Length: 229
Image 1 (cartoon, rainbow, N blue to C red):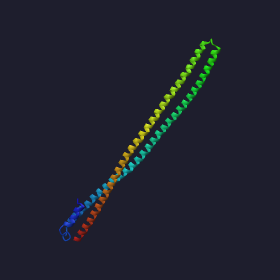
Image 2: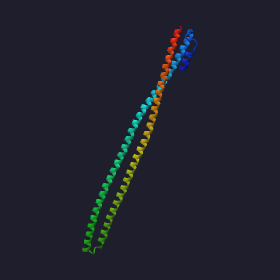
Image 3: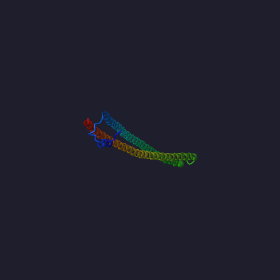
Image 4: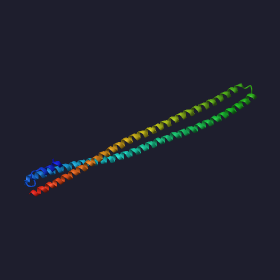
């Protein structure tokens, strides 16, 4: 095939091209070479155009993926926050249970105080009934044991709720960190594809210019060949 510079050299350096009459076979051969070169350049340009279109579609698809990914990450963060809200509700419930336990404790203490008051009255009046004293002491001990159990249960629930809150916060932080890292990677890929598309577009423009220049050379050769007839 003939390049643009080769075609110009053929025109400029052919001895006496303007004065020497070429045969029909020579003319046909030259025109055939030029047509083949033009066809080759057009095929090459179409191939560049196809690659450019593919890259452009890839960029569009990449944008869609980035948008969908950002929506997914936002939904994940919202879900984690909802879980966190649920944990806060659990803490509120535990607080209510603690308040109820404290209320029960106060009630038990009042009952215990009343019980001891009655016990003292009974002890004064019924000194002889020593067995009742042991029964009352056992009842008081049972109440104290119950109070300690309720306090221990509250502490256990409080620790469990705090652990769940800490875990939820860690998961949210991990999701955000992962989302930021993947977003940076996707944006880098998107930029790379955009640069590739721009490069292909410039190459396509260059090929079109080469075809235009080659077409001009062809027109000049045809004009000169026509003048030699």
